[in-house]
Amino acid sequence: MNSQELRDKFLSYFKGKNHKIIKSSSLLPNDPSVLLTTAGMQQFSLYLSGKKDPLEDFESRHLASCQKCFRTGDIEEIGDDTHHTFFEMLGNWSIGQDETGYFKEGAIEFAMDFLVNELRLDKSRFYVTVFKGEGGIGKDEEAIDLWLKQGIARDRIIECSKKDNFWGPVSDIGPCGPCSEIHYDRGEEYGCGRPDCGPNCDHCKRVVEIWNLVFMQYNRNENGEYELLDQTNIDTGIGFERLLSLLNHKNSSYETDIFKDMIARLEGVSQKKYEDNILAFRVIADHTRSAIFLAGDGIEPSNVGQGYVLRRIIRRCVRYSKMIGIENDVGLGDHVISKYRDVYPELEERKSMIYDIIEKEEKKFEKTIKSGLSVLERLIEEEKDNKMISGEKVFDLYQSYGFPFELTEEIVKEKGFGLDKAGFDESLKKHQDLSRAGAEKKFGGVGKDAGVEGAKLHTATHLLHTALRKVLGESVQQMGSDINIERLRFDFAHNQKMTPEEVKKVEELVNEAIKSDLIVKKEELSLEQALESGALAFFKEKYPEVVKVWTIGNPETGEWFSKEICAGPHVDKTSELGHFKIIKEESSSAGVRRIKAILTKE
Ligand code: SER
Image 1 (tube, helix red, strand yellow):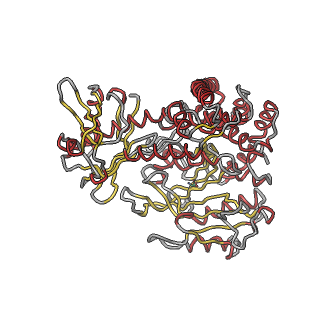
Image 2 (cartoon, rainbow, N blue to C red):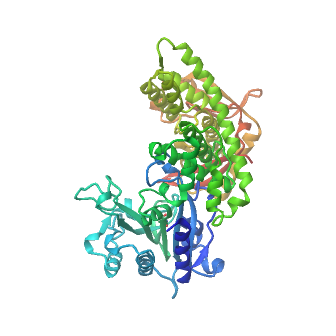
Image 3 (cartoon, protein in one colour):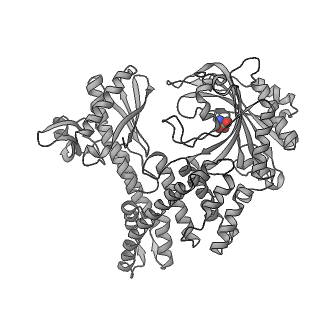
């Protein structure tokens, strides 16, 4: 069965069962607090939580879709048999209940009917997992009974903890619930042979998960508590590529029709065999597909948020292409678009825009590589007697030029030089520790560029801190701060939820400070002098004797908006920040509020 047949079979099955087929939503979710679409249910969040009625918008409470999804957590794992960045998810939903709605029983019946009667999978090879109960929510006895009724043997119904069998919410807050997963035993030949081998085995992929049925009954609120929803929902998801591989008796989706043409093209152009270069071929195939889909949804490479994901994907793809000797565009994009244009017509419609976006980024990366290369060549010349490049120098190349470590390693090796990997790791760690001292998480990937964004968010955090104190009072105290590529997070002592007016006022104050183009000045002072100057400080005991004080103000008048002790880094002037926006104000713990905010161009 090929990919199109499987998609059609799933959707027509559920159409035949009175489900409305809904188009995939964009990879860019509506909810600004979520980076990308990671599950089919995301476009239905408001209906699942009972805020909107599906009957009004879809004339049905039974829905099914094939959804474009993207999971960034898997980027480093690409190359193994089962992980993808972009993937598709098949799903069916029953949202809310009236006489037509179904819950656990209906969901389990549909799933079994489809797998056994439509796909002809062997029921005796199934395992199912159920929630064993935890955290005040009981064991799912009902699901156990329903599986037994379906003819699943009791010893193949596995009880699992919250970690494996409680799904959601997508971000911190939202609908969620216990789930039941169907796993399939592919047979002894795929196994590790251990007596405890089964679903979620750590040692082999003999048993693969094919379908997740979520019994969505709860809402996780802003205090992290699970409250019962007024309605019950079914939310299911099948990892499309995984099921396709299984049906075709393939170990990996790279060996299915989805990637076959791409892999053949890569073999032809590179004159290298897939079998000998599995990692590079898979990364290129996966990332080419993802980049096309991200660009197809209008995402452009940048140093923050979704744009940063796209940038990383494209750059990794270029790097792995070079590893197998491919320097130019070899038309893989056309393979992707022709494979998917019937399902996602937007790809064909936006083809030239997609190619433009990707090509521009590839050129940019080429430039980065070029400037890094000339520095590296100089280094190699300097060290021609030692034939060894120090870890610090390699780190500098990575940090200042965004030059990937793997590329340095490769070039250095080609010249017969050694490279101090341990030294590189140490420098990287030192840098990370320093950044952490500034309450910042290290960015993966392109180093310096991402660092600029980090600096902006750091400066924005100081402005936010002052603005909060101005609006809510001096009792506001920083309790924690965290910055990643897409947002800043700021925890502070305050006893109640901020009103919308307060949030707005804080945003306004920060944006005014940005517009006033204040200067960000760094001084090194003794801790005592720093505190005397009025600089805000936290975690005092951890500060060294000499600290960096960052003042954001107008040096001509001497007026300042913010003064804080911080390890940095920061930008030079506030006008570099763009526009400041609070995307969430929520509780973090008792007496502590949490704000998440982003910087946008406007
Ligand atoms: N939301 C669930 C998942 O992503 C089921 O679709 O697995």
